[in-house]
Length: 275
Image 1: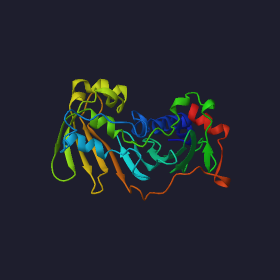
Image 2 (image 1 turned 45 degrees about the horizontal axis):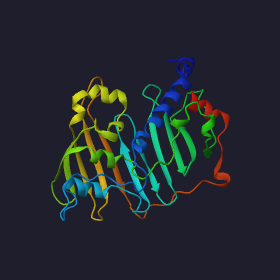
Image 3 (image 1 turned 90 degrees about the vertical axis):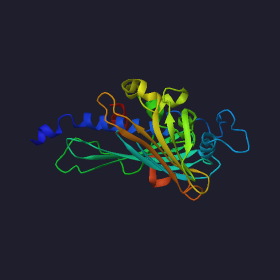
Image 4 (image 1 turned 180 degrees about the vertical axis):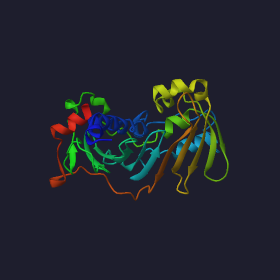
């Protein structure tokens, strides 16, 4: 392959990679309720002994646990980061490797209230040209300069894995030992339908009404993990929708970047995001 051929369409690939990275925020805010939002417990959960479903719902992060770390993955992306309920802040990083050219795009976002900063790094780029050159700083984004301002992530609550809406949509939940749960979720029910993209939901059809899941609750009573086993459908292979939580109350705080660590995003950053 010649250098010219390798470079042709490279920016288009970068834009596609960036779009995929932004799509990873579905793990973060596709259907998260507001902090402190009252969750709907299943009938009978007010008794002295809560049902497994009610107990699992009670373990979902609601903003009272302090800062915590998270990680997650779906069919096409992985994401990891921090949540700071007090600051209404979050930080997450996702990396995506170009399957043909081999370079990797790592994108990080820091969110504090209604402000969004971005940092982008390209690795494995030897022999490639045409990639945009961006400052190695946190770049503050002006949403009004984005073609699709809604695509830029903002802080939208602490339930970054959409665990609350997903558990609420569970049609069966069993406790299989201390802190271990299993059951099925109806992804067509309520806000749970937003956890996957529309194309995936269409492909799943009736399979979406009974997606197997497992969950673990730590000794501190907080949710440690939630895993959905999404079956193969259409062109999509079977995969895990997984989110993990840890370091409740001990993870670092999320603060707005200042000084030489940050600057307003240059025009090339918007060119990248806007395609």
